[in-house]
Image (cartoon, rainbow, N blue to C red):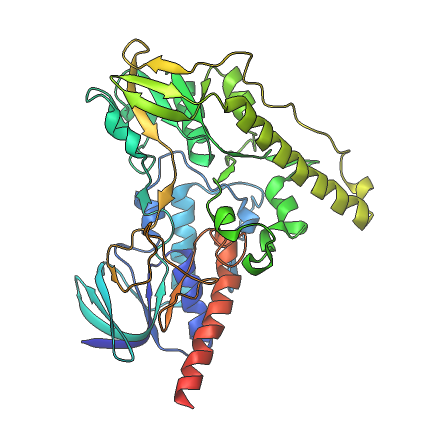
Length: 414
């Protein structure tokens, strides 16, 4: 059985950032990766997907984007190359093709079983990400057998969908991007809209991510939140898309493109879908929250005395869902051939044989510190900061947790 002081599971941005910080502290470790570096970016994304964050925001410890398009958005092959280059430059000790099948606690550490053999370690860092499995509501079981059921992890492009219209459930980042692409391919698209976070791509001449970065919104810490941090961690992803044209895609633009907007799905039986009547209220709430953020940006600009450097403040049109929205749909009559469940993702901890999961299968943690000796988790939404699940958030979180890990090792050795 092999031994490393620390084992990192996953060689995405979080695992690589943690490896860099452990190396700077001369802490012996190994990174176990089930496939190859950036495996999920390579194999579990649709063809046209780009990062939602601009290139300049692709920053990792000791490394950052250095190309000639800082305001552009990386394609998936570009993200994979970016992370491969980082793994090479940082000389991370990665074992590829090592799928972890079980982790169990042993005296003074953990035994990590993989398809390549077993390891022992004193510290374990789980950096497998937050999007291993698609979250599909139970009502999906009511879908007729003739209608294909997919998730964004299975979708690749419109040409590979079955014939017919497409009902997309969920209007966060994944849902709006798929709705735009599939509608542009000439398909009928029905978009089921639940709670969402509306944002413009640009505001007052700069990318919205630039504004959120400069006003400090992305650096807000989990332990300074006045609102319920667990609710903040479960908020839908930002309604953004990365395109070369830096376009804003929201419900208004999708409606004008011919996408039919309906409320969230509340029932599915006998080939008929039922929708909530709360669409208008949810859209009004999303508009309200967007305008609060824009007001925060305006306040920062004014307080900084920089108003002359940017275009004047303005507000976007309220979301228009029409005077009447459909509350039911016969999928057969509507010609719906497939349903895409863009209803979120969840991590896969099926290999973790340590009692640290809650009743819903989520790992319990305090800013990434798991309530089991020597276990840490990385890359979850709002884990330590609002940016924790972004590439740009990996550095600060890894620095914090590596310091905690190193301190515990030193204390044990004293």
